[in-house]
Figure (tube, one colour):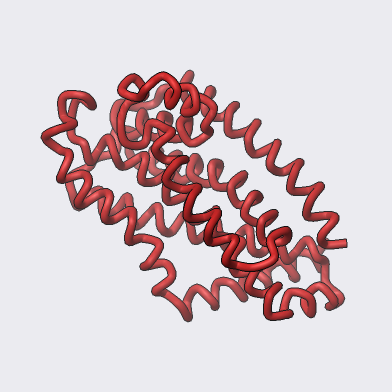
Length: 254
């Protein structure tokens, strides 16, 4: 066990060094959330005020946090796919280390990056006058919800990294997954405003429950029943993805 911890730490340090050497990656990942908060929030402020019952940027912030967690986690397996393409992953798997440490190290790096990006977005929201109704405890809860949503999505990304043949296929999947997942949720408008078929799909979208829980923490306060409902949905989602990931990744790491 101590060896596994050291090996995982070494993998995590590698990815943190990689992130420090390429800070533009994080900046690029923040472009879309910043555009949504500044421009979309401003453009639809007057139009959406009646439907959301207040400041639209405040209403939009939970959706941006969830979309950030989803997008960052979904892209988390891309560096491993590049490692596989250039042969480094094969050499790493041939080394006398636990192969699980490769996955855990990458998983931790993705979620640390997600937490940093969410903190930056929350700080930007404060600049625009958005206030968190639940205070500092609510900020911690928002980060935990984002990480809970990102857990299952990161597992999906790792599965894709080991099953896809090239990064072009990965980028194609990444490009067509984020927008439908966000529009088929309560990220931008209340569910009641969606057509019935979109509402049904939104009800089975884990992102919807994460967004609704985040929104209650930002707008109103601690809604324990909503948080419990969100926790159950995300627990089922994460558990199902972990089970699937353990089956698929164990075969590819063998």
